[in-house]
Image (cartoon, rainbow, N blue to C red; front, side):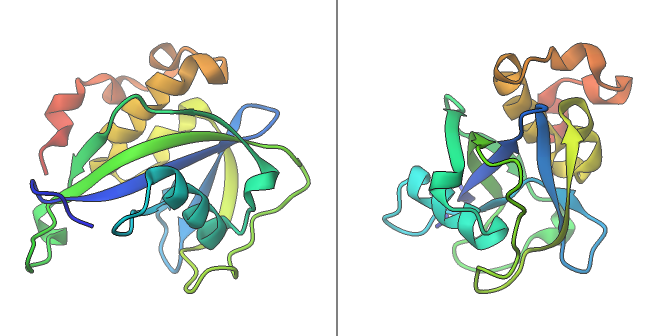
Length: 176
């Protein structure tokens, strides 16, 4: 679903474990790491999209997770020009509601075969501070904004532990 400004409505999902690490997936046949995310269908609430995407991308059931928090508002990023597809309505980027979940069963492994088409072919647990470094540059500002909001819940002070290049203000990196 694309809003009036051209942003695709989307949910972003951060899953943490008992060690306060975050689960990242590697996109199928690419060396690109990211948190699970996915579009919100027409008439679907963000919370419903969260559980659907969690199952489709990682194979987890709601009972395996504890919902810790959600971002207060929507976070946006613009797609670089080379990723824009012409169409009506034109999608210029993502407008995301982010959720932080805790995995209840530390032995439960992600499964990539439960959705209609696998999004990931590998996963890894990363330290909170590492996650923004591993994602493609045009998504980094949104990751940082969501992580800064969730940092107290994850027991970290994010800004002090990031490489200097990631300290630039968010508004500079939102432009595609």
